Length: 478
Image 1: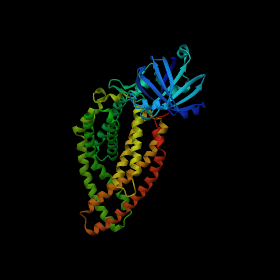
Image 2: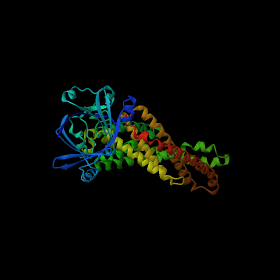
Image 3: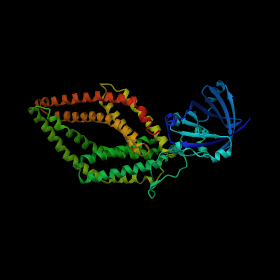
Image 4: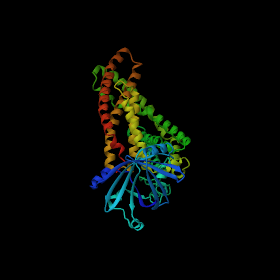
């Protein structure tokens, strides 16, 4: 016999249910639910659900707040037989059931491909009670909006889609004329990307101007490279949401920009610690190092001229202009870019962390140094991702995460710099006489010893990262 289901549903920000309920000292029951939908003569969307060790078949009719529901208990065998014919994805979620202010609540925390999605549902005995209901203040900071009447948030719709639904929300602009929105958790991803690209290109232009005026400005070059890398990381991390051809063109152009600055950056690195190493050598060996220093300084002058020409050239200015105007033209986005930023970001962060741990586990003391460089790039991308998403990450969590990542990046950066310095030294020694080569051998040994110490310290910090990975994975969860 059919029963009326009178229910209101609220979309919440990604949250940690246990932490929330324990904070307010609310007792709860937790159960893992697995469910899927199949087409049957009774309904095109018949639900099968596993709740603990019990299995059910449910048929719902109607839309919105009041629907008819028929539910039957079925055997495990029937459940498993129909599972192979599921329409779309199988939904897994943890349900927290609790009583608060005389109402029974069900807080659903979705898992797997729907991780980050959180619903709060309340059932009522009659329609009037449902109409009169007001959401308690304790859920106020988590509320995104009510989705009772939005069919896109029905579980049947979720199972039949490869993407997250986007709630109908009016988002605030930061520049309406340019079509730029303030970055908020449930802003459609393509709008968030527009704002990120615009802000990054604006910063890059500032450093471009600084380097046009003074090619000796090492910090401006450093920041220019960081922001170009952030832009490249943004395109890479959100790659599935771009038109492939558009993506290919702009990634190629940005890669060329980095190539234009690589030699200058490497020479700066080689010069950076040369005085420190010089103080560790004997007076006799210092003479050989002084010649290396003069060689690098002469090379620096040529690279500064080349850098100044590049910064004043049309290719760089034209590319930055094109990218900064993308918020007006949206034909390079895939339809999936309409998904909410925060739910997309959770998936991207989890994948990046998993990639880092996989690569890190494969490292050994005698691993090719290129492997450490690749891991360093992975950490950079994770850090850039956190910084790009900073408007939707609680500040205390962000500061803590960036502090931990900075330690890892610093160590890997120093290892990379030592590699660059050793490479320059080796190149210089090719044209040296035997006596000079012998003099610089002591310096190469000191560099190698320093590198070994850095590799050992990295192993310790990386072990901490693996143990605390959940801290990074929960950054976007309240």
